[in-house]
Image (cartoon, rainbow, N blue to C red):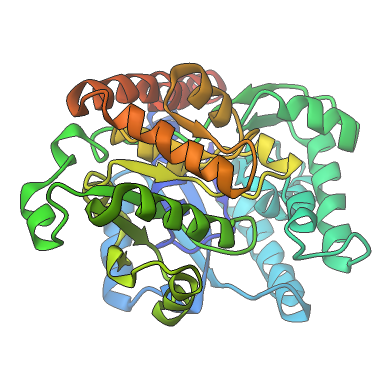
Length: 403
């Protein structure tokens, strides 16, 4: 009757707010009116809820028959292992006490715990937003193949892939990856990208006049990047592109960085290349305000390091950029998105990470921007609705959960 949903994220994290809750609301739409959903989160110290916030959140979630279960996050190590042992025992008790019929996990990290619980309780396992996590950690240089962390996560990815009753991947090609890497042949396989809320990322939030004036962005060419640097994301190359764009557009160019960056680091990156730091606008805003800031921009960048495993994920930011009508600069073979961008002329593919390519890229972006603001944004939003609408997710969850 009830459902246990396992995540590896904090409730306030954007991945819960944009990548989990909207899907859970769809799932609940197709389940019996007396069926509850138990949502497990891991709360990082900087995202902890106050007692007042917790009370408000629980009241809000009750509208959708969702009950929140939270533990404090621990980084990989002995403390994390002990935490998960505690979680496993508590979840076994919850599963039997509350008549949980399925275990639904978001991403393979969380599905490691889901796999253990499924084996111990004989409850079906559903792995959602299924993509590789172990190999990307190798490709980013974070782990080594001989490391314990890699071997543990890769093993769990293989076991859960072979065991899962249902798999919902980010891209269709994940089926080929799973067969090659894990020798997994799925019983039921679906795919859905990271979908976007077009009521939040709406036309009304494009080029907000009062915010344009407040930030002195009127009549400026604005590049936006909403994300972090390091790990799976390029840093040096982004600032090299910014330098080329500054030289190309001159005084009319500005950069809007949304994220938790250190200003001193940004200043060093700019000084190293002769970038005038005054063109950088650095903001950290809650996800509810991201759309209105994205709406100030003219084009965006998704600077994933172009490693093989990135073919199998689904960057939610691309969908959000497209929803705001922005052409995107992106490396090749990032999810299905690079191919979509190339097919519909929604931006530029960074075929080579070198200055000559950056100059060509900015020139192509300028040509797209000269298309005309309204026509360009409508064209890009039309593609976004085709490939990133929640209707895609709705069809998947309806097929799985409709009674």
